[in-house]
Amino acid sequence: MFKKVLCTIICTMLVLVAFAGCQGSTTEAPQTTPAPTTEAPTEAADHVEPLNNQLQIQIETETKGESSAEYVVIGTLDYFDLQNQYNETLKTFGTWSLVNSDPDVTSVAESDYSIVGNEVMGNYYLSVGEICTVTTVGAAYPTSSVTFTTLDLTGTKTEAMGITEFFDLDKLGTAIANGVFEFTNVEQPENIDYSSVSEALNQKYIVNAKELETEYYLSEAGLTLYLGDKTHAEGDYWLLTAPFSALGDCIVNTNLATYAASLS
Image 1 (cartoon, rainbow, N blue to C red):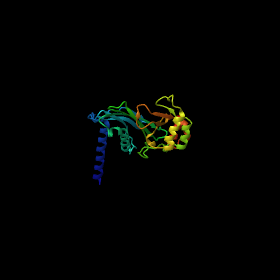
Image 2: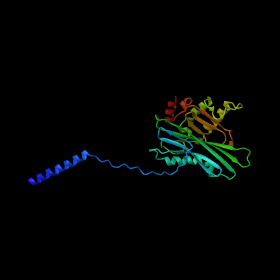
Image 3: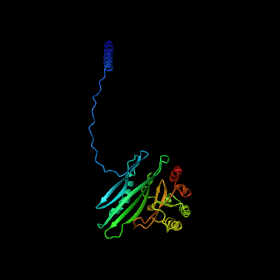
Image 4: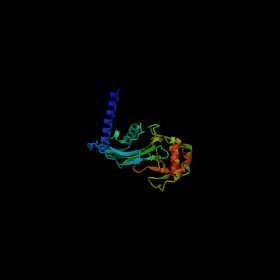
């Protein structure tokens, strides 16, 4: 019994001595410099715009022969499970002019985009506009086509959104008739009065309501509508914009209404 106690006391003393030795002097582990890492080269982006340090949008370019097309790419987000589906949709939209290109045709498609949303909302919509200018061998002049698409970045769906998901068409028709839309890409032609423009907008967006997914654009400036043939002489098309403040009663989308209110 005594031997056991004595042994225990000796062991305890040895542990205390060792602990005191460690306290008296410390030895730092040698610092090492991490080995350099080599990142794979990436294509330079034409434009990068961060939103709230989360959402990143950039425009990239794809070429085919002498033709080129810009398309929008959405950067990484932690909650962005559908990111690849969004980017497939955006690339298909942006590069359509290259799919069936003709050797005698040179096309240049330029894209622009707008994010509708803010940190208060926490929900975002992405509108993309593309102008494709086509030059054909033997043609008298180039032709252009204008297309738009708007996506819901909240993850609800990846397909293009129709204008009726944002606006009440009957009330929008009244706003058009009241003259709230103004020319944005050109000055109003002298030989065109607004009544004829209003009638054309009403016929297209309210009466016929065709292809609305690709015929409108949302931005901080408001709602932009498009008039013109799908393919037409370069510059022979009209973009008309109305501020959201003039469309308050027309807006049926809660997120858009919140965003519009934040602008005032």
